Image 1 (tube, rainbow, N blue to C red):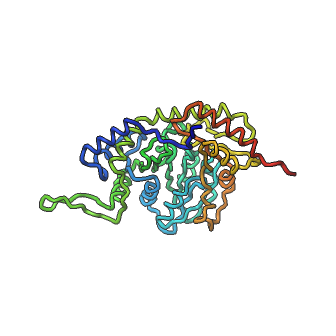
Image 2 (spheres, rainbow, N blue to C red):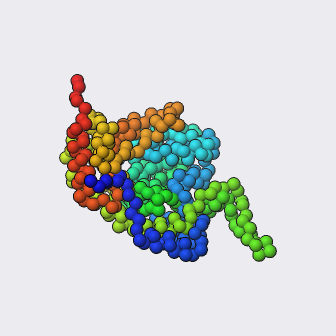
Image 3 (cartoon, rainbow, N blue to C red):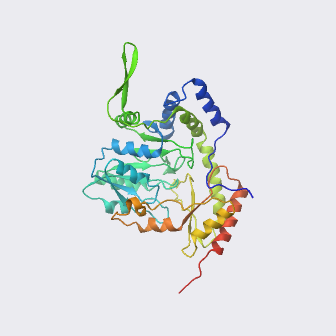
Length: 378
C-alpha cells in the first residue's frame, strides 16, 4: 500500500521553470533581481512597508530582536508551545526567554499569561501563530501597548491565515515568515522579515548582508563598504525565484489544505477519544499542520507506531519549549503547553492529499485509538 507522508511540498513545473530562468541569467549565486522582486511582492501581499528576504525564519527572528534593541539581560516573553527557534533567537542576543503558557483550545499564547509574566526587565513579546492559527492579537496589543513593550509576530506557519480580516504576517509591527517545506508557500527553506518602519528595514537589510551598506567605486572598481559586523542571512535568487511562484499559488494551496481539514472534521468529529482543532470565528487557519488532541487514556506512542507501520506519517505536534534540556532550568511552568505536548498528534496535512488518502488516515486513526486505549483503573 502506498505511503501517505505527513508533509509534502507542492512544487511543480512552474517552480522548475523559474529556477531554469535564474540559471540562464548567469546570476545563480547570492541575492539579485529575483530576491529584490520577491521582497516587493511580499510587502504588497502582506500590506507591509517593506520586506527583507532571508535564509530562514530563525534568522528573521534574530534580526527582529536586534532591530527592537534587545540587550543582554533583557527579558523577552515567548510563546512556549512552538518550535524552540523563538527562545533560541532571544538567547542569541544575550537576553532571557520567559515562557508563556498557551490556551488549551487553540494552542496559541494566552495574552493574560503574558500579562502575568511582565517584570522590570521585560522589553517585549514574541507571539506565535501556532501551526497556522493566529494568536489573539487584540488582547496582545492591549497588553504590550499598555506596558510599553514591543510585539513581534512569528507567522512562520501562517501564510494564508487571517485574524479579524487581516492577513497573518500583518498583525504586529514586526513579523517573521517561514518558507520551510511544511509551510503554505515554500522553496524547501527560507524566511522573511516584514515591517512598516523604513529605518528598521534598512538596518535589518544591512545586518543580513554581512554588514554591507553600499558599494564604493575606486578607479571604477566596486568595493563593498562594511558599516557593521553583520550576518550572511540573505536569500539567494534561486530560492527567491521559487518563492515568487509559490506566492502566486498561496490561495490555491490554502484552499486545498482547507478542504483536507474539512474532510478530517467530517470523518472524526464524533470520535470521543480525540479533540479536533478549534478555529475561533474571528480568524482563519492556514493548516500548516493538523493536530488532534488525544484523550489521556490513549497510548500515543503505540498509536504513532501503528500508523507508521501502515505507511501513514504522523508526529507529536509542537514542543513544550520550557521542557527541552537546553531550557530545563527555567523557573516558569507552562502546564497547558506541557499537556498538549504529551497529547497532540499531527496527522498528514498538505495540498497534495487526495480525499481517499484522508479517509484512509481517518479510518486507521480511529482503529488505532481504540486498539491502544489503556485499561481504565480506579
